[in-house]
Image 1 (cartoon, one colour):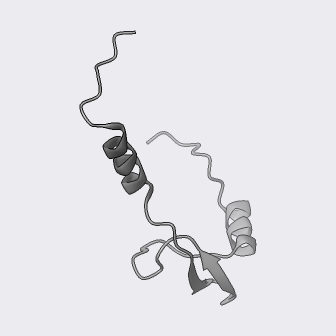
Image 2: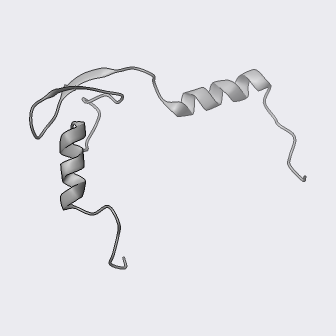
Length: 72
């Protein structure tokens, strides 16, 4: 198939894959729209984007289409 031979051992390759996945923790946070208590998979202290609950997230995308209609 023309693929190069691996340089690292299988254990080292698995460790690299797991490191790239990120941490596997749950954090308590509040929705920034309705102030409802929620659980998220990313650290709210490090997150720069808005944290929304499922209902507020759904309402946001009903108002703002995620599909780009204008060329960049």
